[in-house]
Every structure is written in C-alpha cells, then in structure tokens.
Amino acid sequence: MSAVPMMVLVSSLLAVEIAPWESLATLPIACIVMGTASGSIPAALLMRKLGRKRGGYLGFSFALLCCLAGYFAATRGSFVLLVLAGFSMGIASAFGQQFRFAALESVGDPAKYGPALSVFMGGGLVSAFLGPEIGVWGQNLVASGHNFAGSFLLQSGVVLLAAVLFSLFREPEMKEQKLVQATGSLGKIVASPAFLVAAFAATLSYVMMSFVMTATPLTMREVCGFSLSDTKQVIQGHIVAMYLPSLLSGWLMNRVGQGRLMLVGSVAYAGVLVIGLFGQELVHFWGALILLGIGWNFLFACGTALLPAAYEPHERFKAQAANDFTVFGFQAVASLSAGWFLFNFGWTTLLLFCAPLVLAAFALSVVQIKREKGTSQMSL
Image (tube, rainbow, N blue to C red; front, side):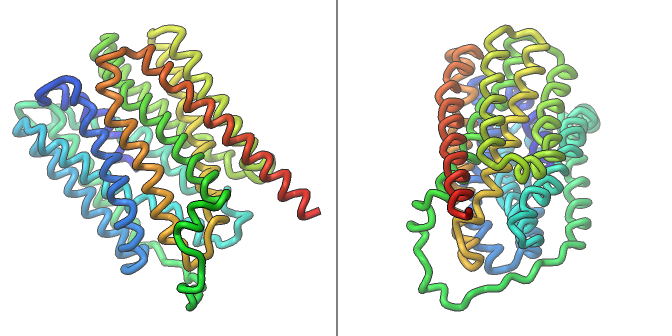
C-alpha cells in the first residue's frame, strides 16, 4: 500500500519538471489507475489459474518494475519512463486489490466481512506515513539531474520486505462447485441489484476521491505556493483518514447496516465540497482531504462487503474482475482528467463538478437502506 501514496506525492512533482506540458503532470498518477483498471481482469484470471499466492508474487514483480523505471526516470529526466512506472504500479495494484477478496475468503462467514475488511484496510495507516516519508527521505538521496531517484530505491526495499512477509500467507480452501456451466452468466451477475449497488458504491468512492486527491498536490504547490512539507502532511492526513475509520467501519456495518454507513460517507463527501469551496488556505485543504478520506472509506468498504452477495463462490473471480474493472476504469478517467481540468478551469470549478457525484452517492445510499429494510421484513 505504501507505494501508491509515495507515487502520488512524488510522480506529479517530478512530472512538473520533466513533462513536456504542465497539463500532463498528473498523467503518471492517471497511469496508476489505468494500469489498475486494465490489469484488474488479467489479475483475477491469473489468480484463478495460479492461486492467490503465486499471483501475489507476480504483482510484487510489477511493483519492483515500477521502482526501477521510476529511478531511471528521475536520473535521466525521462517522462516516458515515469509514465511506465505509474502504469507498472497500477498493474501491481490490480493484483494487490485481489488481496481484499482473499481476506473475505479467509473468514468465510458474511457476518465477519466487515471486521475482516477493517483489519485489512487498517494496514493503510502504516502506508499513510511510510509512503510519503519515503518520497521525502529519498528526495536527495541519489545525486541526479532531478530529485526523487532515491525515493524509488527506498520503495523497492519496502516492496521486497512486503514480498517476504507475504510468504507467510496460506490460501484458504474454497468449496468449488463442479457444474459451473449450469450457473448464471456474467451478464446476469452484473445486472443483479446486489452487484450494481456494490460496484457503484465502490466506483463513486474512488472517482470522487481520485479526482480531488490527484489535483491537490498540484493545487497546493503550483497554484497556492505551499511547501513540499505542507503538501506531504496534507496527503498523509488524507491517507490516514482513508484508513483510520477502518477501526470502526466493520463494527458499524454490523451495527447500523451498510446503507446507513454509505449515507455517512456521502455526507462526508458533501463536506469536502463545502470546506473546499470556502477557501484555499492550508486549513481548507486539511479539512477537505480528511473528509475525502472518511467518505472513501465508508463507501468503498461497504461496496466491497456487499459484493459477495452477488455471486456464488465458484463465480467469484469473474465477478470480482468485472467489479474492479468498473471501479478502476472510471477512476482512471477521473485521474487522467484531473490535471487538465485543474489547469483549464481551476480548483473551485473542479469541486463544483463533483456535486453530481455526491448526489449520486446519496441516492445509492437510500437505495441500499431500502434494500436492507426489505430484507429484514422478509426475514421476519
């Protein structure tokens, strides 16, 4: 997890120096998301063929490729290599996203999905500090024509350590059904209400978060003139806010239901717009990015926990692939357009453009609340 926040902080700042046009400064970050989107289906299929563990090691290999390409991008001033680094990190992230489904499979009981996700996503708290700190520690570690070459070297060491820790993972045994051909098609799965609510909750969470977060470092550094330290701390605070609620979100799902927790996430996203539109001082960026992280956590965690209800165990890989392709495909569009939107229309218009996303999140929350009421009445 630490590699992505490191790339978010470092790649856009490095890209400003070496990109042919400043509007392309967020392209490496967008390529992370595009790599995740394009790699989601192959990652799921390869994990089905190779297993979670061997597939996981393949993902770590792409993370190391990212670090290697990023190092040479910084030392040679190559924007193409920086874009390649972002895309490689995205593919690695596509494999990493499959780990959350492995966590759900490890517990088996749907009642434990929320707590399992809380533990899993809680790892992001470490990445919130570690990733940006790696970017700053390595900024001038290696003498080169541009900064941050050492950041990629340090990150490669963290990736290798993660691969060693992953060797302790033991794949859970899944009860596969033999008559797969007799089951519903993928089209029937993705058209089901359970899949649509789960996928769109996760999609809205990522589109809104990525669109605003991708533009934040550039707005703070290039538009408002804040220091690298201030920018780093805001990004760190945002990532902490993304994962700290995981300590409670699993319990809250069981306590109030996914629909109401999604509604809280929608309110947090509305708060992002209110605070962000109120001004562009440091406190406004802090407040908006913290609420952005909280909203993402509740909406994404609920979407992930709701997804297994849409498929049978033997259908999990194709359903998970379709879900992640939807989520990260739309996120790729948001990331890719963030830099262009910011430099052409400004921070205020960018936030106003997010208003329909917030309204959609509210509407989806209401739909899920009604679904949960209907289910409870049927059980009675």
